[in-house]
Length: 130
Image 1 (cartoon, rainbow, N blue to C red):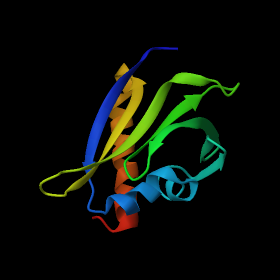
Image 2 (spheres, one colour; image 1 turned 90 degrees about the vertical axis):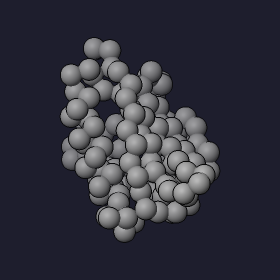
Image 3 (spheres, one colour; image 1 turned 90 degrees about the horizontal axis):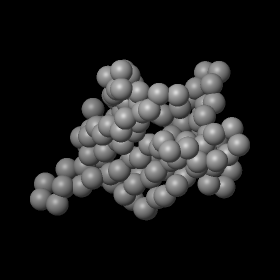
């Protein structure tokens, strides 16, 4: 397997941090914009897209601020890869944005960024932040 590179993208979102947090931290919220379906059992989340399924462990969360999911292998062991969704609030303007931290193979970063842009666009439509 090729080594993946870390990348970050920031998306301005017109929403309250509390509302946004519900969409990034719960299976029901995530299944509305991130995957076709999301199930959780304890700290393990199963993300389902069409016929593919990926499992991740909720590695950390800070209520109202961020969630970090570590991808796990077939044996349920953490891999070195994760994705993190971090809600940022500008202290002066109170503008809210969502920082996405993810990994992709070097030659697929543009493609992965495009995918996130599409998913965040769905999220914005959902919460009326268009």
